[in-house]
Image 1 (cartoon, helix red, strand yellow):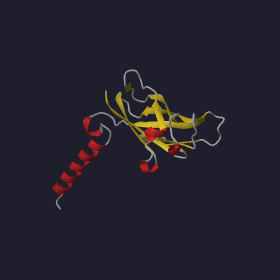
Image 2 (tube, helix red, strand yellow):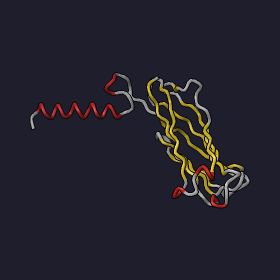
Image 3 (cartoon, helix red, strand yellow):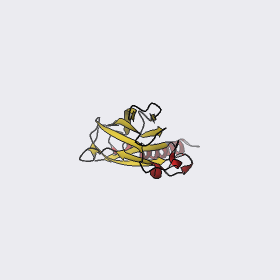
Image 4 (cartoon, helix red, strand yellow):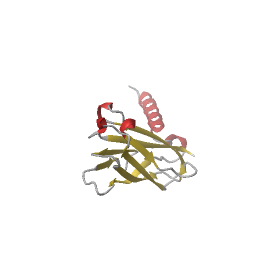
Length: 162
């Protein structure tokens, strides 16, 4: 392989790598991404000690939430800050995926999920954070098929230069 071939392959890989890294590198801006900071969860009502609220994904783009051992009126309240690691404004969008183990019963027949509203302009400044809250609760209309079912939600925000 000639030096020119190695150089050409290196340039192609560098361009391809830059295309996959947020939205910078090759285009003159700095790389930016959105990550979750300080995720936490707590049960409600707090008088029901068996409720399990778990979260994972701190310092990553994907936040996973789960609620277990819920009875009628029980739920989990979660909080996390969405942080823009770059120095440019990003327009944010969200993708949520709700599920139950094995898919039956369906998440929507057992659980309700709410996500607080985002910034009023739909954008987050470079280096800034925005607080979000999430709720997963057992529906009052849930049937006995929902007993002992774990409800999980994955929340991923993406950003594009604003």
